[in-house]
Every structure is written in C-alpha cells, then in structure tokens.
Image (tube, rainbow over all chains, first blue to last red; front, side, top):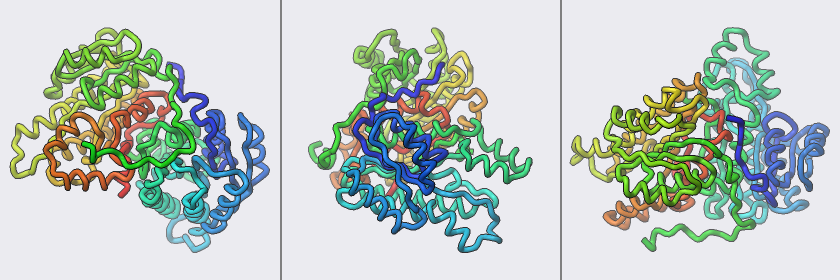
Length: 257
Length: 269
C-alpha cells in the first residue's frame, strides 16, 4: 500500500488559519500541510527570520508572517487582535508554541515554570481569548491546541512540561463549552514523541537506559511531523463538525500502554 | 421527534467542503459489522464512495442486501451471521476473508439497552455484550492472522461515551463499551509489531433508528436532559463517516490504541 492521505487538495480553500510556533517542527509541518490544501495562513513565531523563510516556501498565496511574543496571555491576545484587524477573521487556528524543559522538581524555580508555562499555557489562553471575541473568528471555526501524552503520563524530570500540557487540555474542554453556541470547536492533540528538533534535544539529554525505556514506550515508533499535521487538518476541516472538547491521542499507542 | 432537532445553526462564513478525496480508500478491502442499519450502514456507504470494497456483516441477509444496493461501486459482498460469541464471530470474519485479506475492519454491531441494574438478568447482559464485546474479541482473534487483516491494516471499534460517563439505567451498556476501550488499548500493543492499528470511536447520541426506538419509550425530561449534555446537539447518522474514514486511511498511520471522542462536546463537560 502506498501512502495516500486522501485529503482533497481544496478542502481548506478560502479558510484563514492562524498557526503559532510555525517556524519549526510540528508547527511548520502543519503550516505546509494546511497551505497545500488551500488555506490562507497567518504565521506566528518569535523568530521572524526563520518564520519568513517558512512563509516564502509555502504553496498558495496571501500568507503572512508575524513576530509575536507568546509568553504572556495579554501580549498574545493583543497580537492576535492586531492580525485580525489587518487580515480579517479566522476560520481556524493551530496553537503549537511551547518549550520543553528537562529538570527534576527539586530544581524547579519560578523562572523555569515561567519558561514552560509562558508560551505553553499563557500564550494559548491569550490566543483563545482573542479568538473568542466577536468578529475574530467566524462561526463554525475550529481551534486545535498542541498537547502531549505527557498530560496523562508522568515522566521523571518533566513535571513542568507534563503539568503545562494537562493545563491546556483542561482549558480546551472549557473553551469548547463556551464556544459551542457559535459552533466553534476547540480540541487538543496529545502526541507522543515526534521527530522534531525539540525531540532530538530531549534524546540527547537522556542516557542509554532512559533511551531504551523511551523507545519501548512507543510501540509504533516515534512519529513524524506529518502524522500530527494530518490530524490537525482533520480537526480544522469540515470532516469533524461534531468533534469538540476532546484531547485526541495521536501517539502510536504510547498513552494506551 | 420534532423536539429532538439540532439547535439552530449559526450562519457560516463558508459552505462545508468535502474533505476526503473520492479515491482515498481505493482498492482497500473493508469488513463492516452492524451494516444493516444505523452507523454501520452510513459508514459502509461513505467508505464505498471513497473507493473501498466492502464485505457487509449483519444478522439479516435481506437488510444487508438493501445496504449493498445503496453502496457506490461494485465488488461488494455480504456475509450474514450473528456475532453471538467470540468463537462464531472469529469464524465469520475468517470466512469473510477467504477471497483476500482485509485492509480494514469497522465494528459497529451492538445493542443499546436502558435497564435498571435491579432487573438486569444474564439474558440482558448477553444481548448487550455478545455482538459489541465478544464480537470484537472474535474480530481481534481473526485479525491477528495476516490472511485476515494485512500488515498495516486498521481496526476501528465503535464505543460510546457511556464507557466513560455514567448514566442511570446504562450499567450493561456502559460495561460493554468500557470493555471495548480496554480491548482497544491492549490489542493495539499486541498488533503494533505488524503495524496493525486499533482505535475506538467514542460516540454520544446519534439520531439513528435504534436511538429513535429507544426515545419513543423514554421520558421527555430524560430526552431534554440528554440533549442538554450535547453542546453541539445530537449527531446525524453521517457524524461518524469522516472519523471512520480517517482512521481507516493512511492519514492516521501513527494513530493506534486511541479513543477518539466524536460526541458533540459531551465528554468535555
């Protein structure tokens, strides 16, 4: 069987979609996938040079790149409101910004928690807040937030990251209820290890025994950014009008173990 | 049933667009249980429109023929048989694959029953567990052979939010649907070496014939209460079509062992 993802190439035609964390990894892969299926994207990340390079390489036209600080809810909300003013209401959003941090709890200080919760949690609150305002997102729109199997399964030295992911999952469930009257859907994707730069940093930081254990926790192997991008497209598209408030595992059976 | 219609849909900025290509399941052989009505029939029709060749299972050959007549394309077959327990179910699936291994299995067969625990007898449990749970075990056993399900194939089992959320009168149904979720997680581990994927769809109330029959006997306050638990309203019979297509297609090739909630927001609140 040859791979056939099967999505119609115009299934997102005319849809205006926000992608945060689009300068690398899963955010970049999702941006490329969404643009290839007709979406008009507004890309957001801290590093505007890398982001601009991603934008320039996207298929289709009308994409924009914005340097935004997602560390705080208020600054993120203001930035999204500004993009809406310039480029119009959104039909979809994929929030994939966030940092990971490998540090035992005994060493976790405020600055570390801020580092992980900044873009990982507060930025997501700000973006969803901005999109909840009248005129910022069209009725029937869809928001997808990147989460992780870490929201459900513990791992030594990952307490801050695990807690941040559990926090966004809970936010997604509440936002789904608040926005349901407008048929705006809100979901998260719980991925396990996906082969991104972030993943390679993590693997480089752990020893051989932890590596073996991590391998065993991924029955179907590590994922590719494209695997997540397919799920993102599904949740942002008209294929999922009755799916909201869920935290979907896209993880090769990692969390099922 | 007029009271049960979905809530008013706000004006949309865009008309809905088909998401899957008509050929996205081209050449895939898929076995569908519960294919004579409801979700099983709706999904069978959707899969056929996307190129799949189907073998339909259900207890009633005449009704399966009705489903077959509604399918797009040709080369579809029926495999009537009652999923009475794991052994007969395994035999039915194995026999249905005699002309070639399947690439996918969609298990929708099941029976919904509202009954207080104090009057739930073994016969009531059998009615709920036989097709849904023991049928799934039969599928699991048969599909463990490469001659029945190809390496890289996909199994999709219908579960329900009842498997995770309690409702009075649903002890038997809830137990059965929770059993399906447990089976999904364990079987996913077992079949991962063959890259066979196993996922469950956790649906809430969908306006099928089975649901309408149940509702005719239900108190109106129960109906209103249940609707209030669905932020996006009850589902249409087509609500599962695209989720099933996604899980049976290559777009979900890293998804296994997962419970996919397709429930109109029910489990969020």
